[in-house]
Length: 269
Image 1 (cartoon, rainbow, N blue to C red):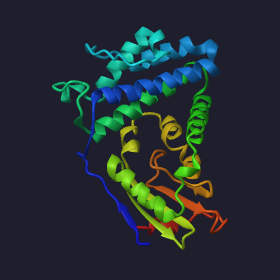
Image 2: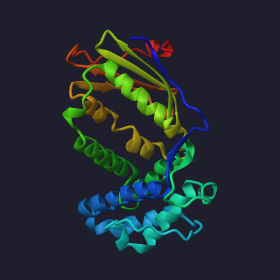
Image 3: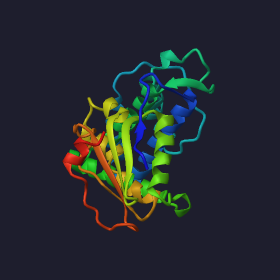
């Protein structure tokens, strides 16, 4: 299989609605609150206060959401602040000439910043009740559980070539990375990410939380592609490296999980 190249356009857009963006963010926060109440019931008020303080002073918009968020709606101040935080992150002024239910072209940079930074603010709120290291570990554990819960053999990719095609379709749609991929002898797939919008959009925040939220799950996600697949990786853009060096191994073909050398990655173009 020849090398597959991934590129993105800086000003790429995706068709969605502001309401869908709000629902995605609020549903995610509602799930975080649910897990926090289950795991840390005596600390939920401290966590909520920290989220609100991390949102800071933001302009209030006269936007309401009628979807059901069973936990979030128990905390009306947080609920209202969350709506306004999402609108601030998405740069709502760009899109406010449209009804929030209307499907419109939203810039990918606005969309990913909203999803990533909104999650960052509530995830990092855990530092109100535990150390930074404990908070990052907690987020990693919770994110891994979510990935594992979605594991379904009916969605497996039988070959690494099929996985590359899927990644190509997905990344082309979301316009998230500049990368190159190649299947090597049917047993390994090298995937080098040279530029990542997620890492760029979170670069001014704590990279430990960015990694926990968005990168730590890649190892379990590899098994979601096929239970026989294993991922090795030593570098990530999120952590300040010059590239991400993913290597997927098909253990049905070769159980050797030796990661390609740095010389290999530096010459993999």
